[in-house]
Image (cartoon, rainbow over all chains, first blue to last red; front, top):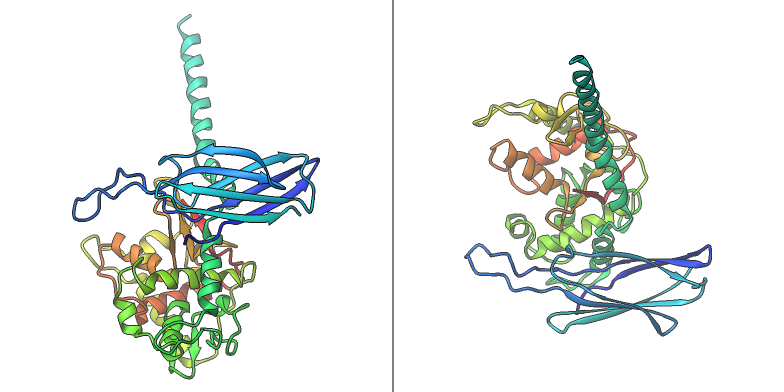
Length: 103
Length: 265
């Protein structure tokens, strides 16, 4: 099981700014280990964000995203007390969902 | 009439040089500012806190009774007073060597075995999280290393000698790079470590997350890399000379605010 994400969401001026830090290796599949064998690709492929249960964003990610990715976006209309949940799915089929309350 | 285009060229060249300057040091500062918001050290802190509280090792115990210098279990403010003298081990210890002691005495791990483990493998990974957690608990505090004990003073003197000791194929010392203000390697500014380089600079900026490699580096790993760049053999994880250098840099940085765990390029 992957480590939890760190999600911060702050409401201001009619929108909530969401900052997400994900814990993931994000291996590209281009690198070789000390023995010369290719290190298999292992990275997040899909990220989705839900605001009180309704999907507000879907993203497709690839190997170009750095290790331990950071994502920031704004949700229009979100207020303090609302719930924001983030889900990622990687190419090994592993996934993780974490939730935060807008402050 | 030929003068005008030449003058024009000169102005263009100067404008370029100015733009280049802004692109240099200021650009890097701007880039760092942008990174701070998403510092992945947060992830290491969370992992470290969990490791601190989790029962692990042959003795199935947590580290919550570990004495980092301010009494068993006190983490807040401990980091900015390290390295310091510990009566139980009769040694001056830095954060990492102290954690090894706790992992051995409380949890039953083999400290010598962990010290020999390469960085980023096995229990060294646990230490990455633990140093992030412990240092974060002192974020914003000023360094205030104790110098009352004779051994602490001795370590300062030893650290000073090690800092100025020139050797190796390049005839390098720590002071070659860090003995004067305003030096840099490529675009990387080098802090002057013989006095306080300021808040969040030099000793006050480690442990840090290295963005280029995606790793959390403690002071031991930082020093290991300094020695590698000097073409010195590494004196060993948690060895006296690395701790002495920590005492020297830490005492010199008295009052400097710690921003650890920081983020580095």
